[in-house]
Length: 509
Image (cartoon, rainbow, N blue to C red; front, side, top):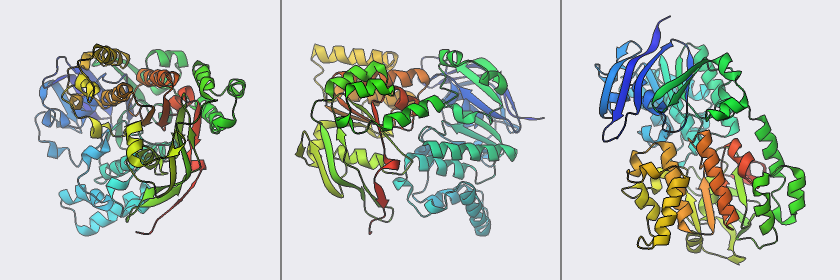
């Protein structure tokens, strides 16, 4: 069996980086295999995926050495356009690979570049749309899709040229449970058709039964290689010790179901929480402390949404958000979670209804002053030239107490060694932690995080969970939009599932 991917002593150092990102990597991936690259954030997974698809050294500059052949092509010697019809890629942030505003145009784009006829392009679009179940999205604007929908469109576009190899970087980072199940079915179909698949991934449970091999990276090295049966036989403790995410999510899902029953915190006593066993004991006391307090933020008859061709509106059940809570906001992609949190932070006006701050009806400007939102795509909110400056943005840098707090936040988030780096030079998971650091520094009473553990490994997911707990103990109100079942089950004190509450409709344009 020929190898679609052959790496011989491959090393790479990014331009202006202080150390090697990939060191003497040797790996062979036969045709038709599904191989999972895993390891802690920054371990070299994404760098290796960029070498496999030819982006390194063609687009990402630095010092490359070794021998890399992908689909029989020497990626360092041959122009990348030779790989275009052979390799499809989905990046961790799919927005960075879009060229068009409309979904159907994005699907057509790679086929048009290859000079295919209009008839063939339309045939492929229809086939791909049916296979990926995206027919209702074809006429939509990409800018109005949810994060998960954008990721599905990116995978569909990457499949338009019928590639021999697919390289996927964190393909489920923004997907809900249903969408992950659909992704699993798609990847299984693609593998069954003979396509070789390389996946860099933290969430591992969905790949059980699909992956043939697991490659564990550590500090730029391949630390371990496992056949699927060997890897799946490892104990949960061994998986956790390597920093890997859980292989079985059933215990987490049972806990989430129990947490959903605690959504009406006003009617829940501390003993109810403790007796239920559904909330983690490490933050039960913090929750109980604030059960008798007044809500920081409430909604009454709230309808959220926006107008236009792709607009929608959704009725939201009345919500009370209390100090000391960590509230998980869950539900399927596109159900309105991000629109709701943007409304609660004053970035979008309510379609109707009322948002109350400390019991009083309030306007969007006051909500913006009261809350801090860590966006799903943190690239929109990183402005400074260094990580330290980002955390100190808008604060008094002459105040020793603020500098001390900044140093502590950098340490807590494992960012001290990146303090002088430009935020945009960091990995996706590292950027996420910088934005969370800004939230910790802001001192506001309402902290809202939209998918804060997207692209994070187990260690940094738990680190974020611990920081959420600290915020709750300080009396902050913490609202977390998440599809991460491990985070929700382990750290949230209650769950609001929009999929089970409220109603959705299309407004008049």
